[in-house]
Length: 75
View (cartoon, rainbow, N blue to C red):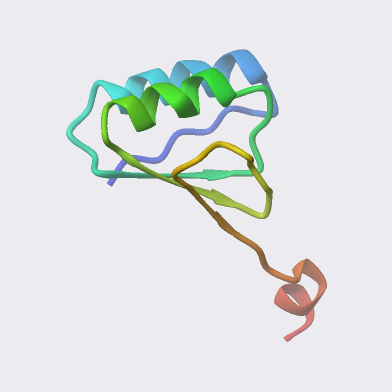
């Protein structure tokens, strides 16, 4: 397992995505990200599973996971 933080920076997020692309990881989970479609497509081209948490995508092959933030905090 590897964890990367991108501090709400699209540039740092893409850098982290490309770092993960060159690793032996099978699955990449991206929490919230933005402006990362090119990186996501690159991961898919490398046959990595991509899961987006708490966001949607129209990119074929991407799994999207949604959750209720308020219930997660108060339960």
